[in-house]
Length: 460
Image (cartoon, rainbow, N blue to C red; front, side):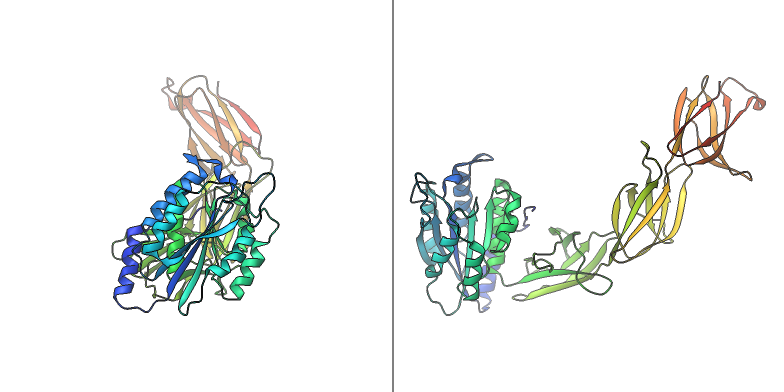
């Protein structure tokens, strides 16, 4: 799983939340409980330092940015920090270290407590989740949120996914956010059933992920992009998309579209105060202009992007030469893509013209790309002419079909030997040495090319 990136800094978040507060929008109190991993594995080296020291530094900076956000309360629960892991694991080693209070009061306390932590014990994630239910005291207009920061998986036999699902069902908290610190990517599915998982692969993107999680946790404005197939169903995915500020034309967000674990388009968090232009980087690209995001709602952006596949194959014994081709929309000259043989690319449903850059050129018209199907184009494997000259001179190769001579290419006058890859067929080579100043000195050689076979053509 690749890490998320966020093109919004902390100061922008603070301005956004203050703005919403002062214009009088009715918002619930957001209560965020940080569950912080202080197990012994946090001593492991990671980038510039050990994990615990990197986490302390970045968490400290992050907490400083939260102190002025309105309608926000924070609390801290830790695990693996009270009992040394040997000789036996303490699978109840979890404690609420800082109870809920306004962000202005609790953020400094959480920062102080984290700075004093020393990794000692094991990783009782399921037990810590269960205990956290009591941390959320009764509140009439609160959104209860958990952000779990961990560098390991459950080590005490518990089932975090079951505990999380049960507490969500009871309304104790919303779907948790899980931030994996230097975790193996294979654990993404382990945490995916428990909450929304974010992979922090290095310390450089740790703060970006924290900001992204904060924005999604506090903001109730969410977005999904439906890439619609030919039946208007949101089944298309795995395409990069770019959101631009429609006014300034600056890039605001870049995402690789995906479907979540339930097969639905994944949820994004975008600032609602911007009008966007969206480009979906299909072939050809799809553009949607002047998109507005409604505050406090789940926004769906539908984009017609039905796609199929084009597969290019060589028919015959493979050689060292793999040609490429130019892909254009039917009847147009603009190049959409350069696709190599042996490769499969995805295209918007429709008709295309293909120019294969073999010698001679192969031109295919009205190539049909249909929804979710693969159109396979095969051409013969090229052979090659190994041309030996007795000196420098001028010459050309022609395709000879028995009726006319079709020019294919010119020879390089400075080379004594030359290898030219050609499609199977009958050819003529017309050549004159540089010092032979009479047209009658033209040398003509006939030769045939077979797929994947070298044909020797001697001019001396």
